[in-house]
Image 1 (tube, one colour):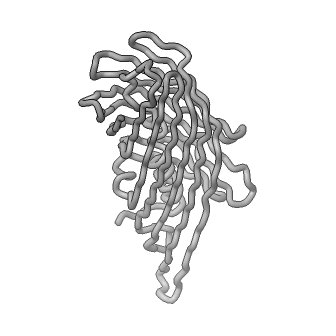
Image 2 (tube, rainbow, N blue to C red):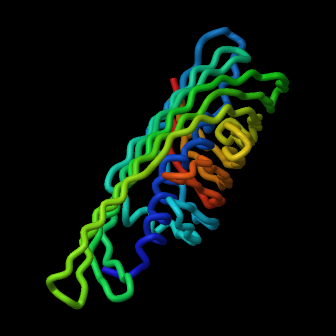
Image 3 (cartoon, helix red, strand yellow):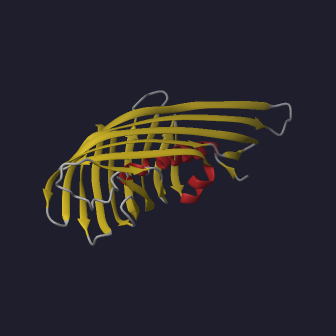
Length: 272
């Protein structure tokens, strides 16, 4: 186990957990867009699991301590204890309804180097996100579909740090128990684009902004290709960028995250 700074590790794990479950926000819009039928029938898409190989750069704050962030995808994968993601869409003519729930549980165990003391600590972070919204196709051609979207995105985070510090004097042991976290809601608005390239390939793009106050904002953009390998399934791959700027503005239990993350993504879509 590597030696690191306690507060930097807390901030890093908080950021990792946030990203592990925010990664599917763009992927939620990855239905293939190839069957634009005018029959009036409902079309459904389910994306049960996807991967976003993102990196992170920025800063996080917990309490009175701010920590710089420079996290690679390998850190997220190594610390992941559990994850569940599910996205569903229902489309009829120009209208689409989408819903998504995500859960991630990270729990790295690390050796902490705190000057004269050393300890083994367990850092737990649980993050739940739920999104609900709708989209309307305001322009359609034979090979393109433009949509405007809107909805709500709710995020809840729970942080727990348990550590026992051992000093050079073996009789001196200090137990540390840090708890934190917060929840917030964004109203989101944005656009989606589907461009049919062939009977199997579709280009998909999305941009949106989230707003919950002057210190609670987000910007999201992604572009990808969707390959429809048969009538019920497709695979997608592309690239995504997400910027968060959140601060709960509390004098105690301060919690803030100001960073961006980007990287390739891929997953599976099921259609019926």
